[in-house]
Image 1 (cartoon, rainbow, N blue to C red):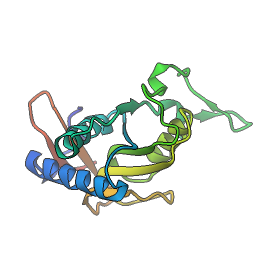
Image 2 (image 1 turned 30 degrees about the vertical axis):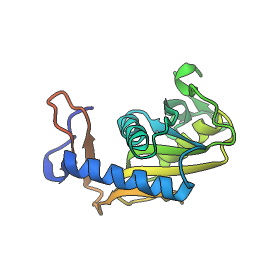
Image 3 (image 1 turned 90 degrees about the vertical axis):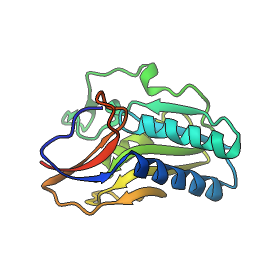
Length: 189
């Protein structure tokens, strides 16, 4: 993961706190879905992928079931791309295997996983990308940090930590960083 942007103001969660929050989310997912037989996990690149893998490990540890886990590149589905006068998005990307999941999501309960939710625009793009792969029975959202500032009516089903922030602050989640540090930081922009 990249280094925190801006000056670090506070450490919001250390590695132990992240693991505890993700284990709590794991139990909430199991309870809501009455097990994990129909589940699959989809991490949003970049930050959601290591968290989806952690959820997969937790589900295996708790339920003894291997849950399909994939990652989704949402770059092509962002609404902040260039648009022409007809409103069509233009991207340097073409649809590739990066946008495809390695398993069938039709009729499954999909848990989208991301590190931080703010405006909701990333999640909107992820839902669009997800539906380009099939039609799930349900789509649920798990995030490690909810920092508020929503611009779209999107609310996570599972939250590790709510962190009220100002527009002059950012939240940086570091997992498997080169220096070995795993933490969540509050940063000044």
